[in-house]
Length: 314
Image 1 (cartoon, rainbow, N blue to C red):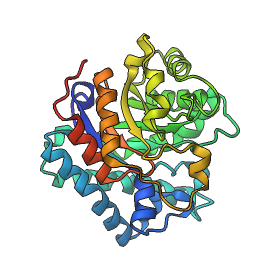
Image 2 (cartoon, helix red, strand yellow; image 1 turned 120 degrees about the horizontal axis):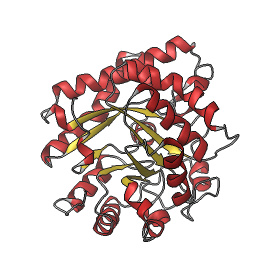
Image 3 (cartoon, rainbow, N blue to C red; image 1 turned 45 degrees about the vertical axis):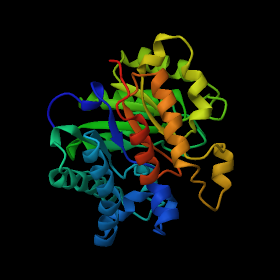
């Protein structure tokens, strides 16, 4: 894709909860919740294509752009050994994940200029628990490896998803700046609307922007239910204009409750769609619509239908 990111000027869709859909709905084993391992086999690659393709068809029906997010959320260097891989093997799977998205884009009925291939970067550790927090330089150095691999594979942008702390989000943003790629930064929040570190979403967005000279293309919220963060976004402040995307959970449960679950809480897709509609009515600058844990094609379809033709702001 050449030119500006379509989500900067219009609404686009993205997928739902890749890992929870594959694991709970399709019965596909994901060691350590890592979907990148599927790229190692023909069957795994076919499973991923089968997962992505209906989302592209949904975007085509709604004449919407689409962000194809690579299956690399849990594919940074620390995960190589636990997954039984050498670093070069994990790097190859990162590249294969991006190559699969390029093939899907080339076969899609949607205008290729409206489909963004995004390299997904997840937290170094757990997506719900910040654990031992790196300083900014350490985070930039650690994530820089995967960022360079994804950049070499030809992604259009990078997406830092499920960020639990400010330093890691800042480090990834600086790593993206090093390779000259646009990046979106998506924080996860607890039921009180704050990051797992206790920092407010306002402080997180402001801190990353201040440390990186506003480098991030935009910010998002993911892996939380709209009820957990909608009120926070209602604060009359300039920083909320930087929030341009939402990938919400289907469940209202806390991260601790979700972590302990053995069955999927898929919530109510139609209700979730209406919550997105309300959110966009109040925040028309939001342009990226997708889902996270517990969501699947049903949820994103409901979101797309509920939010169709809503006005937006720049």
